[in-house]
Length: 70
Image (cartoon, rainbow, N blue to C red; front, top):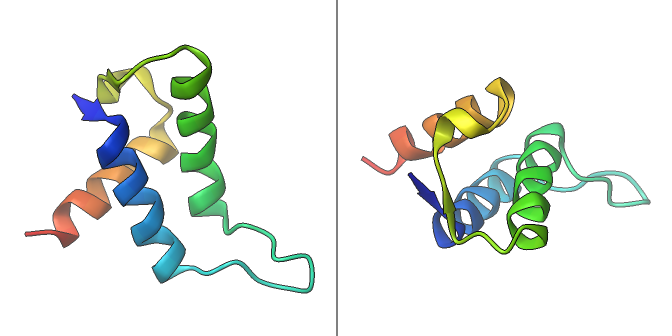
């Protein structure tokens, strides 16, 4: 399971790894992918979700973040 707090931590991790760029401060593809999951959780008022409920790209980003914490 992935909690909303963990997702926020993963987003912050990827924001540090791949900061916003350009004059428009566009989000990196990694942050954008996780932001979509975050928005879905907020909209659905969910506090956690199973990793198999999210798309492959977001799941891989979460797993990479989890591996970086160890």
